[in-house]
Length: 227
Ligand code: AMP
Image 1 (cartoon, rainbow, N blue to C red):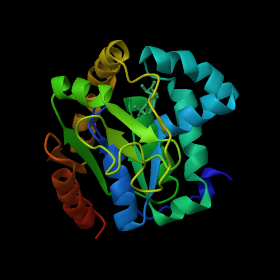
Image 2: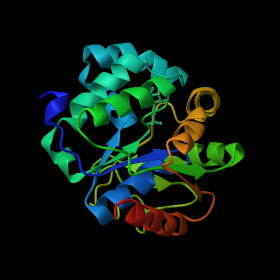
Image 3: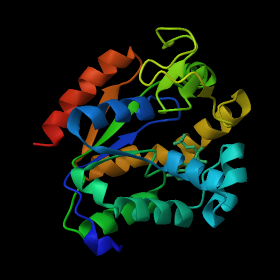
């Protein structure tokens, strides 16, 4: 399927450093607004697990906490956006992460007469990110996110959503890699805040509080942006 067949009605972007809660919040917005969460991190992890050419090229880069090349990420995102379920509208989680990616997204959307409804910056402090990332894990069955301190399953060792009893932690969620990922964010991704401000679509939200409070603020922003 090529870019010309993409019919995405709403395009939302979640911007923020690793651990800001983009994935958690994107999943909640997905349910609330019937949108599709597109996480380039998840797509890359799938490619690594499947051993594709892109996955093989990305593996070591991801383990080091650096950014995968724009060409690879843009190609993966473009393919995923061309799939029919994205016609419901998408929440981009972890993409774009560089100006080159932001420009590629603009071109892709323009060729389909689409635009970005909102780019939402989740504003947090670096010190908090390290605490959040080092305690997080997900259900191996449904991908629901948990945290050693902030969000434990109601019943110890059992996923609240699907009842699965196995959980997994990401290889790159360790103290050393987190430092590289934060550095990559500040050097290459944070400038996108100014980029989207210049395009008149930037929304900022304080993402330091409780998951439910941040979710409520985001629902309001997204509700307005989709009108
Ligand atoms: P995430 O799950 O969004 O934290 O991404 C995990 C890792 O995948 C990142 O540290 C990068 O190595 C890679 N990655 C994910 N999205 C992108 C992107 N848009 N551009 C470059 N690398 C990415």
